[in-house]
Length: 239
Image (tube, rainbow, N blue to C red):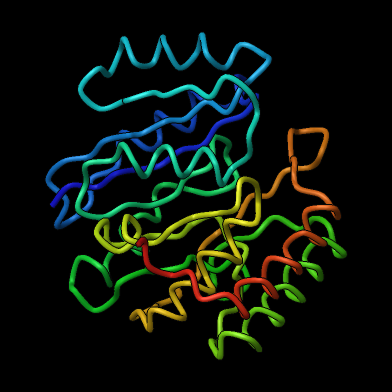
């Protein structure tokens, strides 16, 4: 079974070497091959140079693609999904907030054919969590609550980065959101598809805005609108 790690990247030159090193060293039972599909979303720092260096070091694993302008996480993931060749995939940010050592935990239900998709929750489990923004965590929980009310699911962390899918499933779902609306959109659509969904607790080493965090309250408002939109609109299968 082949794993595709999908990594949207925007201005992450400081962290890329470390996170890519952690991704590549993972050995996961049931996974015989791995590819890292990186999409640089119009970075304006030295990110592209770092990616090209990494590709030279790992040409059989790293496959980079480039957006000419910053279009958003959703747009970058659309490109990554269209180019991936694995049997299953997991989304990985280009920083150190999420730990690739937990891939085995997240992917196990899919590898065992118990789940179609798995979310890694920052709000359950005994794994370590960095203590940071109260209002940010409250906003995440509110968005998860609203999403749950309209999808009739019981997620604890809809906004998590760590989402894993069977490749044939994620490739069959149209993605309309260009930016952070990807999270509530894909959640609404897997609910409409009545997928087998699991959630597992993960660790979380969140970063401050000074350290490069990008999501803000405007994205929260847009997420509410996205949740409402895809509650009404049934757009869960590519035509």
